[in-house]
Length: 196
Image (cartoon, rainbow, N blue to C red):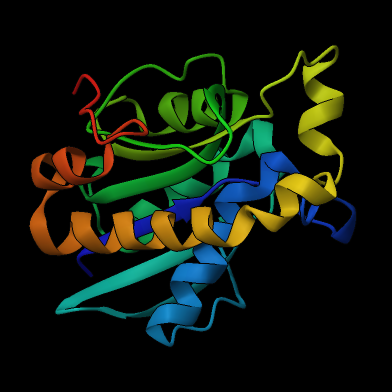
């Protein structure tokens, strides 16, 4: 096994198309693009094994609810004998504008409770993450309510391009490495490179 790619979200149909479930949706898109089925219960997650390019990968969606995601991620890494250096986590980020994407090689949780759980459980913040921007561009009165509610129709229409970019970013990390992928994907509108 070369990589574990974990998308964060909440189980249950009521959360399926909420901003907080973009990690799950990105895993679904990545799986569909690469012919991987993610439906096997494993370590409190739905998981699937396959190949992305020449790499053997584990795709997983923890079913623990967001704030306990790490209690699934750590056993998955242990079962497949992977270090956190071989972990890629995909998740929503309310600090980034809707539709944006940022790759980071390491860093803090930035207030994201699912990431806090993963960092705490695996014992390090030195693993790759793909952050998907979900800020709607207007004032959000209640962060939790916004993150757990179904996406408004306007944002839902813009979901496909973001999920495609998320899948492409993960594929790039696997094929080309983190540094090159950050240069390619961490761009603002107009092509200006964001801080790396």
